[in-house]
Image (tube, rainbow, N blue to C red):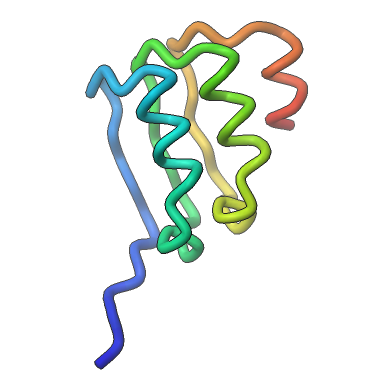
Length: 79
């Protein structure tokens, strides 16, 4: 039996912060994700770096991180 392959994930305004973003970036079963909305979650540079460097999120085509606490260096890494 095949599992469900999540394609879109919306977690805006959930308060996940850096810890949640880092945890999300480490989830190997999220490789099918194409769209992720993490707006307004108090995510800072540590969380942004984890998301940018995650091998499991390489297929994400749309990543919404508006209204977070991400600095210019981390923003460049996400480009």
